[in-house]
Length: 374
Ligand SMILES: *Cc1c(COP(=O)(O)O)cnc(C)c1O
Image: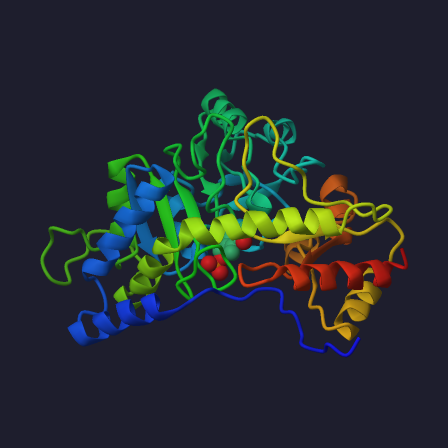
């Protein structure tokens, strides 16, 4: 022992490039609604192979505007995953719509298309699959369900930058509004921020207007023809994003290599389940490394044992329908989505970020072996 340097869960990669680009914006005096926004949108759209992209102030803001863009409103239902960050469900409530959950696939942990279709009612307006932990959701199936029932599709791609579908299309490049998030633990960060990629220019125009208080680009100063929000992303943040774009390929490759190292270091621990391997040409965009602890193991105890060895870890993610707000508001209870609940009860995120080195991966693996007594 003796090495008490704590290994954090996540840590962004930022350097001289981001500093220089931010300094340029500061010196220019053009801090918002400036050229960096357009440049970041263009570069990001190109990366995911999307015709358009709209920068927004957060992933949550992007999901909200995307749901509005596909027509979700008062009294509608939106089918989504209970195994996600709470934002993907909350955004339906912002529009007085109801998030309707369906269970997840036990292997990919993504919304199960069969369960999702079974949840369709006359009030269903849209389906919002989440590419959880960067693994591409089965969009072909969801698009067919949407076509059969006349639904809108919004993709929560906030964890999936760099992921690729089986047909080679990057996640976010299928034309459906797809939303990315740039919080500090994501594959690409602007501190806070988000991006909606999409194929329909009319929806792009609506999102651009609604992120800016409902102003249309060609209207006079402070004339507003619809309700909007302030969901803008500043040029300062977009400058950080442009710096991150320049190192994105490298950061994604390092993440994939680290995941492979973890797989090796954690092999053979009895009952421990690792993130599913890529299958049938699908490629995960590595965001987090989440293991499922063996059944019967006390997770809180494991977190404490890891912390005592200088390793941060976090239960990730809790089931949304079992959060107090969702229980109280909608009367959800245990047993509704058994796959999600089982996974949520055993999931533990381990330190995972490009700056992690091989020695630290081994330290984490050793600490986990010791904590589990195997
Ligand atoms: C990060 C994330 C979001 C968006 O988060 P913001 O903090 O609003 O940028 C949405 N959904 C999922 C699944 C996420 O992981």
